[in-house]
Each structure stands twice: as C-alpha cells, then as structure tokens.
Amino acid sequence: MADAPVHLASGKVREIYALDDERLLLVASDRISTFDVILPTEIPDKGRVLTGLSGFWFARTTHIVPHHLLKLRADGRSTECRRLTMLPIECVVRGYLTGSGWKDYVATGSTSGHDLPAGLVESQRLPAPIFTPATKAESGHDENITRAQAAELVGAELFAEVERISIALYEFAAEHARQRGIVVADTKFELGLDASGALVLGDEVCTPDSSRFWPADDYTPGRAQASFDKQFVRDFCETQSWNKEAPGPALPEAVVVGTRARYIEAFERLTEIPFDRYLADPEVVLR
Image (cartoon, rainbow, N blue to C red):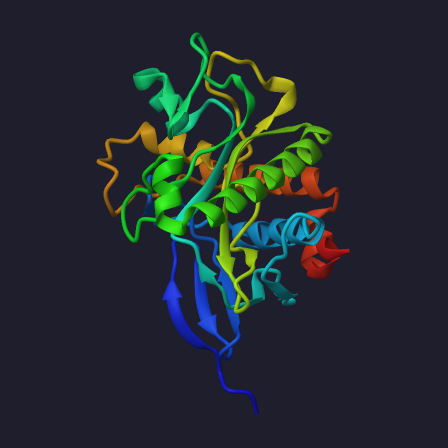
C-alpha cells in the first residue's frame, strides 16, 4: 500500500502534499483572497476552474517551456506534479496599463524600471508587453521590483531566459484569448528548476486568480474595466469599512454567485469546453 500524502504547506488557495521525493500533490481549494487576505466566504468550484484552466494551458504551451503537471485527478481540483526548486520572483507580464503598473506610471512615468511613453491612460494597451517582476512575499503584498533587481536575485543569464519565456507565454495566451473575446491585461507565471537545472512552468497559468481578464466587447481605454476575474470581489471589498487586514469581510450571496459565474464563463470561453464536461472528465482539457 502506498504511503499517505504528507501535508507540507497551505497557500492562499492550494494545499500542498508530498507524494514522494519527486512528486507533489496540489489541491486547489475554493478559497478566495483579496488584498492578500483570505476571505471567510468560498466560491464554489473556483478550485476546479483554476485547475482545469491551468491544465489546458500546460498542454498547449510545451513548445515554449516544459511544465510540472503529471496527472489531473478525477476530482478536478487535484494535480500530481513534479517537484521543482521555484524561483524567488513572480514573473509578471503586462500588456495593458492597469493595477499597480498604472499606479506606478501615474506616480513616476514608469513601472518596474520600464520608462513608458507620456500621456498613456488607464487600461491602455502598451506598445509591447513588458516583464515586470515582483518579489514573492511570505506574508503581505508582493512588491514590484526592477528587472535589474530581479537579475540580481536569479542571475543575469537565467533572468534573460525567464523574461523571454514569460513574454512568449503571455503573447500565446493573449492571442488565444483575443480570438475568444477576452483581453488578457496582465498575468503572472511561476517558473522553477528541475533536477537537471532546466526551467519548468509550475503553479497555475492564465487563470482568473493569476490574470486580469476583460471582456473584449466592453474594453474602453481611459477607465477601469469590467472583468472575468476576482476584481468583482475586490470591488465589493473596497465598499466595506475594512482596513485590509485579516479577517476579511464575508461575501454576500450575490457576489458569490456573480464571481462563480465569471470564473466559469472565463473557463468556457478560453477552453471552448462546457464546465460540466470538465467536471465529468477533467482530462478533457489536456486533449
């Protein structure tokens, strides 16, 4: 009989278990966090959306970089993965000026060391996607850093390859999404090294948790955008008298239902697979 998985850690969304010396089991919960605080209310099926979408992208980006996925389990939220030594940076790519990138630009005219043209407006498409790395915070907020600072953390040669891979992944996903009516404004990837020292894509890929997804038919530069991601939850939390420290506010039923619907719509648009079909056969996203 195989040994039971050993619990290693709890993330904001995932529970991480060791299967053996070479494999991990990642279980995506329905927890949702905003402003780096896990909220007391879960979003039904959210973990399955994240798992299924990540599997979909893993299967379609092997021409850019290998991935850690070994198997999708039947519950639709658990994945068996290769163990990696993860890099100490978040690999953020921005195609549009929004979020912290927009705030940096308003204050300084640049973001993460990228000098940007004058006169850009909120949500404007950038002349080309830019790599804007961030630190990985054990607690609290990740912080934007410059490309030079990131290169100091991982080494110049490895950094150059990480930047190239991250932008290639973004461009592939953004074009796929554009053809299906979704703007991928920005996203973040996590890369690690396998036992041979090769770069491998891990964690999650282009999900509503790791990306900003905007409906293309409603996109208008110069303002905040409607979204298929957890911005809907952030917007609700901003209306509450909350200091952005734990515990976070409970979500009303309308926000829960609306968020679940947005996540599932993003899944179905991007994969062109009915969500119920994924629930019945998770490996459909790998085909």
